[in-house]
Image (tube, rainbow, N blue to C red; front, side, top):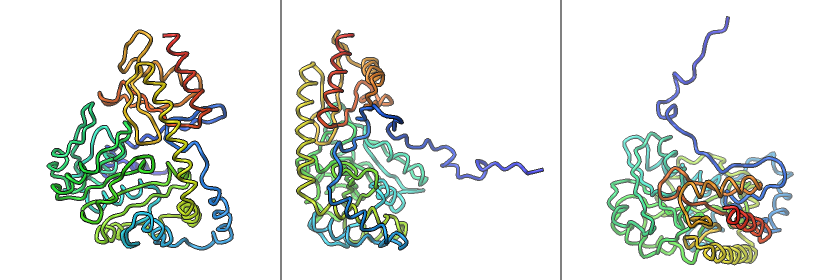
Length: 364
C-alpha cells in the first residue's frame, strides 16, 4: 500500500495562497485574429533566421552565461557601459531578479494600478509586502505618492499598460530626486514612445530601466529582455541571475535583431501609423481613447445608445470573440472595467476588427 503524500502541506504558505499570473488567451486552431497580447504583427528582422541557423551545430554547447555580446549591443544603444547591462529570459526574468534582490520578507515593494499584473505576483512569490499607488482616470503621474511610498523598490510602467499613456521624463526625474529606493521604469513599449527615461541614468543611480525584445523586435517567442542601471545595481542582479538564463539561439537572434536598426525603425513606423489611423476611427464613434505611446489602444466603447461601462465593454468583447477576434478585457478594476485593449495588428487584421466593431454598433 502506497502512503498518502500531500505536497500542499509542506509547500510555503505564500505559494499556497498565490494566484498565478494569467496571460492573454492563446487560441488553438486557425482563423483567429489575435489582438490580445501586444505581439508584433510583423516578423523579426530577416537577419534573425540566418543567426539562428548558424547556431544549430553549436547547440551541444552551453550559451555564454553573461550574454556578453548582447550586453555590448545594448550598452552601445543606450550609451552606457556593458557592466551597466544585464540580459534576461524576457523582461519578466529581470523583474523577478529585482524583487529577489530588493524585495522579499520584511521589504516593501510598490507598483501602480492599473499596471502590469505580474508585479503583485512576483512580490507575493518572494514573500514581500506590496504598496499600491492608484491612478485616477486622468492617468497623471502621482509623483508625491510614489516618492513617499516608503518602498525599497517601486515598479513604474512607462508607457503604462494597459492604458498606453507615457509619463513625462521630467515627472520621472522628480520621483528619482525624492525617492530613496530603486525606481524600476518598465519600458516594455519604449520603442513606440516619443521619449524614454534612459537619459536619466547618468545622474540617478537609483534608476533601473527594463525593456523587452518581445514587442517592437517581434521576438516574443524567444524571451529576451534587458535592464540598464548603475554598475552596483546590475552587479547585485547578477548575483541572483540563473547561470545560463538566456539560450544560445535566443542570444544569437536578439543580437541579429539589435544590429538591424533600420528594420526596427520601419516596423515601428508602420505600427504607429496603423495605431493612429485606428485611434481616429474609434474617436469618430464617440469613444474615449487614451493617447497611446505603445503598440495597442485602450478604448472605452460606447454603444449605439450612447452607453458606456463594464456591461458595454463585455458585450463588444463577446461579439468579437464570436467572430474569432481576440482582444483583452480588464474587468477587475473600476478604472479599466469599461475599457478594452486592442493590440495593433497588420492593416488587414485591423480592418477585420473594425468591421466587427461596426457590426456590433449596428446591432446595438
